[in-house]
Length: 342
Image (tube, rainbow, N blue to C red; front, side, top):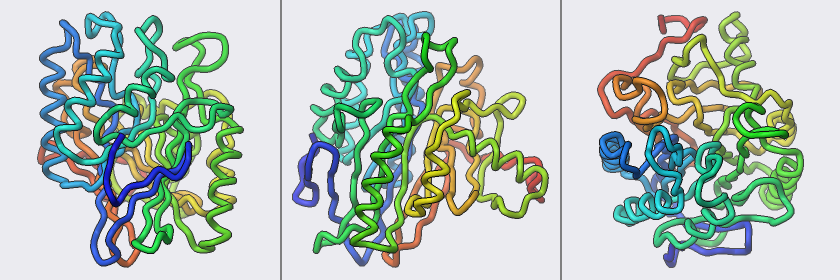
């Protein structure tokens, strides 16, 4: 676990990081690394690790947040099912930067027949020298539901970061049962934690990080294409084939509850490697992080406009800037319905 005089673990589901009041605090979101560390993925792994290194060095973050599908224990692509070994190698690589990092699970970190499940991976990640992670409450759905609160030197909470497990696949099976979602008990826990913070900080604004996009992301995009002025475009594009969103077939309640609660103003996800869209809907900015993947998608090595990271900067005055950090010099902004992007 990460150690610093600026860092504290409050309980089994809460951490705090003290940040300077007169400077910027930079958070780098990285997603969908899909590292195989197997005999079939050596070339792709080298490219992915170099992309991560370049993105970190370019953005100079104070904290790294990884939003799932970090490793890929998929035998046909990697030649290994050993996600324990993959997780250890990933931690060894990240620890070299001597920067704190945290993570949520995606739907591929524990593929069917892989060596260990999320509970064991959680135990491994907690051993990382610069890793911030906890399993969270045992009675909640998922593994890794917790808060990192950015605080000032007096302990005042400035910006809560909510980490959520968006789970893997639905009831009755794995991939063919469809993608899962954030469950109602997780939503209840999240809103209870935020409501408690709002008692002390009525104007608190929070961020949420998880792997899979919400159904409302697609809903907002489709409304924007129809000219709905209640949806505001910020950056990026939808480049998945047929404008695909990898959303759950199950209706989740997270977005409605978050909009009702009012504390969460920013949501960050991954999952769809070619999507980089960021837009504001019902007072919440939803952002696809730029992906790293060189392995999972067919011919993904040839693609480049989606590859990189997403830099989230909290300014000293409390304002938030969200910008893409591309590996290359070209970023796609092709979005139907947005003037000047086609």
